[in-house]
Length: 208
Image (cartoon, rainbow, N blue to C red; front, side, top):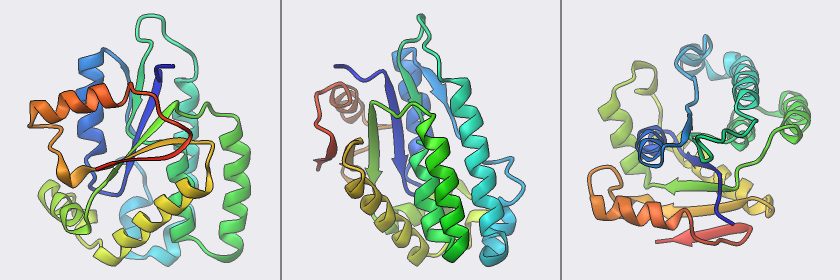
């Protein structure tokens, strides 16, 4: 069955949003973009992670839940939905940024919330090298991101794969994105369009 709800996932700087916008335009799809820029805790978190981690993760979880709930119904005129994140992202980052009782509380709330949300028919995870992620972060020049360390990105990368490995019911397509230029290379872009509508089994599916 062709996926009607496709979520792009990946590390910070993986290029999810730019590609989601392009593909949604091509497919005349509904577009869901994470509203991270207005988060009042984001800049403070990068300056003082221990103090602001729980506030950041809880606010992101609430924002993502409310946004995804708004798009829960089907649209006859735009039957395909493209999102630049999935609710799974919340638990991945929380697992990395929280510990102890804070993470246990967060995990319980996440499980309650995620059960009430429709899961994507397909999650496309763009796996990039840490060097390329760092370069993308440098180029887009968001001030609060410039202090992100490569070790933090590696931790997030590892936790994404661990999460998808442990949640075998999710249908995940892992693309080695360093090998493609989906934005500027039309051949690569057409390959992606054909790829996402192929049949994949639940679990991890790898494309090099």
